[in-house]
Length: 137
Image (cartoon, rainbow, N blue to C red; front, side, top):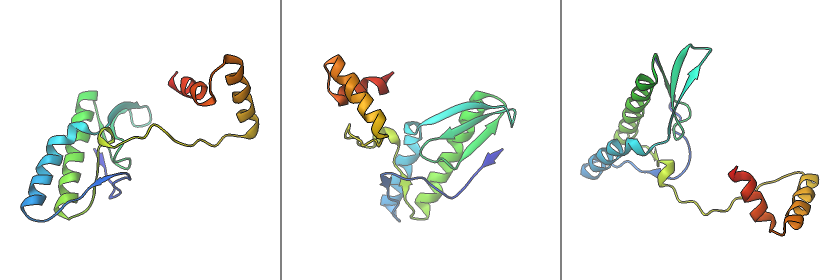
């Protein structure tokens, strides 16, 4: 049983173009379906395994085994990529192929900021190093 939506997600995109170039891009996307971030988990509510894909958060596939759920979501994503490409719509790039700078901004309450600065000073490290170590755990 599949649950679908037309929402394709956000991020860097691969464009679909008509003609031979579009056909090649479609083939490339179909071959690269393994590069998408798939996850399989148990749904107690549905009493089935759920296959999900991070790049297409509105899509899922329910099935009786983890292997079937993975095959189902992979097949679903492949068909959605094909449809998006054929219609000339954007296809989300796999998370694994997106560039990352290694920097992002986090807003925290002033009291927590102060506590972290004190902890970093006590450990003799920068605030960035302390927070990075805490996030890595």
